Length: 173
Image 1 (spheres, rainbow, N blue to C red):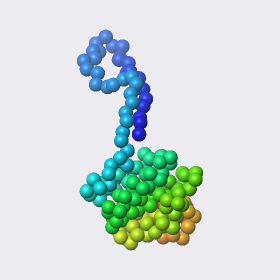
Image 2 (image 1 turned 120 degrees about the horizontal axis):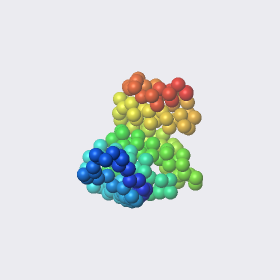
Image 3 (image 1 turned 120 degrees about the vertical axis):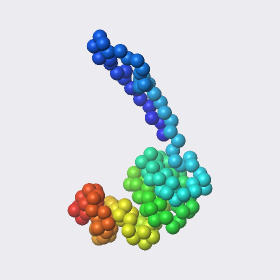
């Protein structure tokens, strides 16, 4: 991931008494290259919470052009921690996200039936995770499976009544 831009120099106040002693801000052009999480070997990840964080992060930084490669990496992470409910849910959400943005479809990589199965597994493994129920509910809402969306979103809302996204989505159903 490359971040590039330019930061303008901050103008000093025109007050005669103002003196700049140290300028700690960088100004001018900048370029930063950040390594994406899929560069990390899944076998090097020793804790399931670290795997969750990496899969969650990659959902936001990976582009659709690398969908198959990213899903393969995330699947290796899931195989490392197969009984982690949050990781299964995040992987299913990642796959669903790529299905939505991919022009050529990813049914050859992971089907919608497999995504539903992953969500079900995650909900069976952890029946008290509001976030897992919310992710599943939002997926079903996107697929226009309103009955399952309502069930998952209602359960999520019962577990955590502070989520505005869940409340709004539940009202949509």
